Length: 337
Image: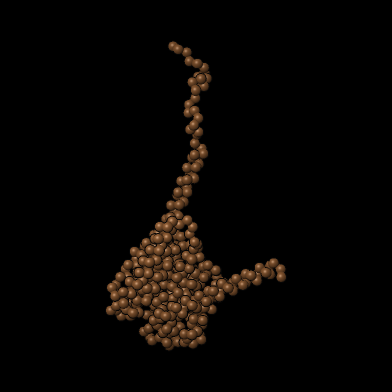
């Protein structure tokens, strides 16, 4: 076997492994998302596979579409209602992240999400705009298959769209942050203590979201703290955690979701999840961009100081000409009048 053939075989195996991982993660996260289904066993307030699909496209490239399509088909084949309907829903679930990926690439999106414009693009293009396709195709398919009542199209469409959008907003940033994550070296003990305290506070807020007293608003100081101190690496997991806590509280109608109809709770739930995710992502991106700008300014100041030190006169030498040199430059010694 030549070196070229060996290289092609290795690349092919790596591609197959990546696509298999995308399909497996899509399928597993889809099954988890269906635990909180609200409409016909397949429409949920948080659909994690959309975040996995978009992150896979951003990290692997367009070839990830095959893994997305396979995972979507495996999830939907057990839900029905028919093979043509399953294929149509699978197509919508595949086209939506592809469309979102194309929009993000067109805007110059960076997977590091270290600019405010990257966070805006993910929110408004990747989530809100891109997921219009999956919601429209999926809901229309269920309606044409006569599994939705005449008045159930728009409520189902709204839950489908917001669920897919939430998957992009709270799952994709976590995967993008994990890609660039590394074990910090030389981190002071105080920083580790702060991170531990943040994790503990996040767990506490998740439990409080399910408490009888409506304390869900405590999530926003937590998200602000995580974004300011740890940027995307801290804000994204916190947003995911508080969103999951709210989703667990809504069906049980506990905390702020007690005493309301299902539709009212759905609106409140998705409004909270959207506000939490946008707060975390936009604030983390703004802080990261500010820190980078400050570092560039400090680096420029250091460079200017070094240049000034190199071109400045030697302060240790004579600062003026001697009297004799001065007399020679003036044409000789002066005569007393």
